[in-house]
Amino acid sequence: MDRKQCCVKLSVQPSRGLMDEKFLVLVQSVLPGFQLTVYASYRCDDGHSWEAFAHYTANASGTVNVSEDHSLGGTYCGVEPMGLMWSLRPVPGSKPGLRMRKMNVLTPMEVTISVYRGHLTEGFVDQVPLAAVVVERWYMAPGVRRVPVTEGGLTATLFLPSGPGPFPGLLDLWGGGGKLVEYRAALLASHGIASLALDYLTPQITKENDVSVLFYNEWTNVQHPQVIDSRIGILGLSFGTSIALKMAVYSQVFKLRCVVCISGSHVQPIKGSVEQIMTSFHNNVDKTRFNEEQQVIWRDLLLPIPTDPSLKVEVGRLRCPLLMVVGEDDQNWPAHESAVDVKEMMQRAGNDHLLTVLSYPSAGHLIEPPFTPFARASSYKILGPPLQMVMVLWGGETVAHSRAQEDAWRKTLVFLRENLYRATSSSHL
Ligand SMILES: *[C@@H]1O[C@H](CO)[C@@H](O)[C@H](O)[C@H]1NC(C)=O
Ligand SMILES: *[C@@H]1O[C@H](CO)[C@@H](O)[C@H](O)[C@H]1NC(C)=O
Image (cartoon, rainbow, N blue to C red):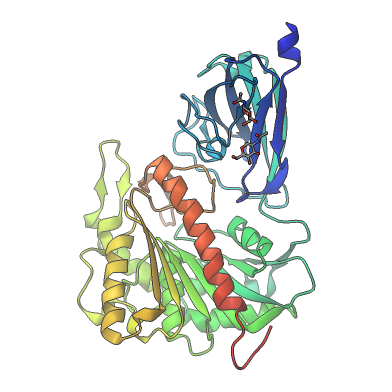
């Protein structure tokens, strides 16, 4: 090993941060014009390995600054400060259809950043890096508390921000895949909002005619002195938006402060249980399409947007602000067409001042927190019976989708803070 090799300096700042925080990667003390590869690798909780890499040339001072220098090739090109995160992809030879989701939020995502001599595209494991550091990416900020909720047969987890509180609250609903998924709620709590991640697709809930009463009971079960009852919002993604919108418009018990709908729709039979909503979607299963790679496209199941008002949530009756986040290349839900119709309905009703639509060209369905690695398609378990795995096309294009995630998250946090924290005439915080 020559002297230059042993003296390469690599720093990543901060080396410990939140998942949605940027980091700075700096390589120093190499020869001017030295060609190198910056490589990121990550092994998930489930054992699958992911990687991202980019080719750089050191400047006249022998430095590469990933935040301002051009990547000349690799899993991303150009100046991309966080490309090493959002362009992470399964290592060659991995099982197809992987999607990265952190299931254990009590541990960080540990990403190894390393520097290799030359412009490499493969065989990283066979080479010795010139330098390497491990960075920690957390969904839970220091002091955030994770409170599992099991009362009344619930499957839920409450995340409380650090500090004495009390805090406004948020119900966090994921899509039709079911299960308890905690990472987004943990990250929202890291930004000051007490968030309840909820598995709402349990048999007990799906058969219920008014989920809002059930959720309210759940919420009162959870009833934590640190959560302010009068400052509750709801956020849903995909199928979660069906529930969120319905609660926002019809709930007699919840007085929601605001609603966030990511990649969803207001199209659903307005009377009936969660199970009946799902059945109504499944009735259109013959509208399923497949692309050349035999990936499932489900967006047509809700198209055309019905004109029959009993098949759409009456958004004209909405009394709280609504933020809709739309990926214009969503292949799973007709999010764009739905947002257009919601806007028209609200304009007719005269409450469109409550609506904000964030619409992103070339973004897909899975609009996640910033820097979440992009998955255009992934394997998906259809809730049985019969239980079945399919490859679902979500849509989107890596760079545009990653930019959309960053922008939408920043604006969602602003929207939530404004509507959940802002003092009203009747209450102060
Ligand atoms: C090389 O890049 C570093 C980090 O961005 C910068 O501080 C330095 O001024 C650059 N050197 C030259 C000669 O451009
Ligand atoms: C690297 O680039 C970032 C973003 O432009 C800048 O804030 C930082 O100071 C740079 N680091 C050095 C050592 O020049």
